[in-house]
Length: 98
Image (cartoon, rainbow, N blue to C red; front, top):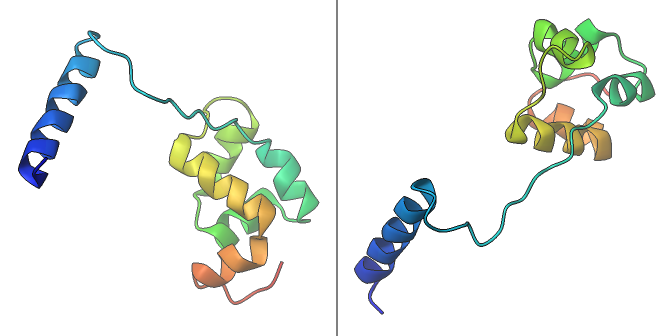
């Protein structure tokens, strides 16, 4: 099958899913992390956590107080922060070490 044909078939499949005519092959739902627990394990205030990882402090507060839930990309970031905080801090340019 040519590349163009695969793209066209993929677009048709996406449209059918959007219309509710088909179900996606796989849906990956990332569990909502416990932001406060991650932050406390790292020994950081909400402000320091926000600064270190480039997340607005208001967003951290909203997540921790249950007013908002992290979307999937934020959940992924939080999971990686929990797993390798120093790596994330270095990757985004933070000079301090966790």
